[in-house]
Image (cartoon, rainbow, N blue to C red; front, top):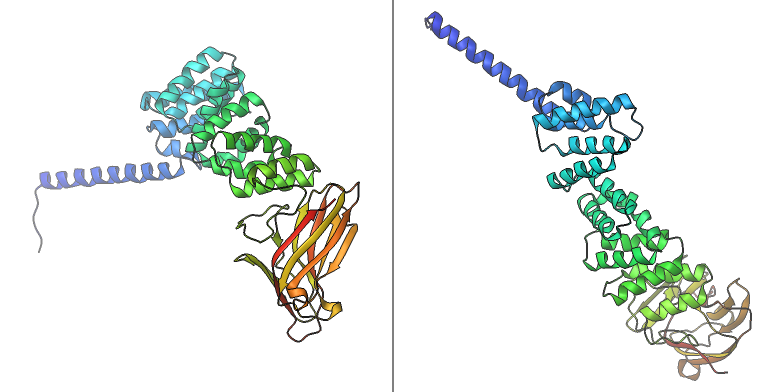
Length: 400
């Protein structure tokens, strides 16, 4: 049914439709500008030139490390416009600060960045500048505070900052302040401690750092401690390796093997601990106070090992087995080798039915062999059931 409307009514309706269209356009362009603000600040600025934060993001594109004088002038112009549009646009302030620093006016740059810091603690450029400025002034506590702020608010920056912190930890003054920072248990602390062993220049420095952390009551992840011991051994720092190992395994004796009854429950063993080799078809595990092993018929290989740092002398290997029943040629054997795999001694285990499962032999460690490896090796068995057994006690002890 047709409804007659007056010209005034039609005029009102047209105005309302126009208003809705304009509002719709601005809503759409504003939303699109927000989406594009990071990926394409220039286009976002064209879509929403009135938005202070978008204008600030666009200004930042002209204030990068390689920016020309003309670019920086354009950045300043846009940054000032952004602050007129939104006085809290921290990116605009940091852009002005960076440009001021580049022009050599450090005092003004510090004032601008101090204002940026008041506006937000989440602006990455402000954080990184604050780190560098603190380092330039020799203010180590301030530099570490800004490292902490940066890593708390931008965890992805660990990829950039962790290598710097790891190298800097060699400096005693920085190490002291870093320990204080880590003692406060920042959320990035464990990630950093897991990063250090594989990336620090010298494992001896890492060991000293971790010892200082331990004395300060800061827990170092087990994987990081094990990696540090292994790195010291790999580098040939045997005395330092033992000193650090003894600090994390109190009561150990360098002149004998460790954990004779397999009672240590280690999620991440070091080279100096028992390591079960479950590989190549051989099944091996340490649990419930014993070492269990099995291998299918015709399969052999290393089953268990532990690195040693023994002084030259004579050592007795003794222990107890159960379940071993093989021909002479198929019995597992203990081997002691030097660091270059030079064999020092070999001893085939008797069947467990002999001497109540007890076994004993002596090995000689010569001079010039500071690192040895004690290994239990499975020999291929012709038995249909293959090889199986367990050892509930084994120890290598110096006798003279």
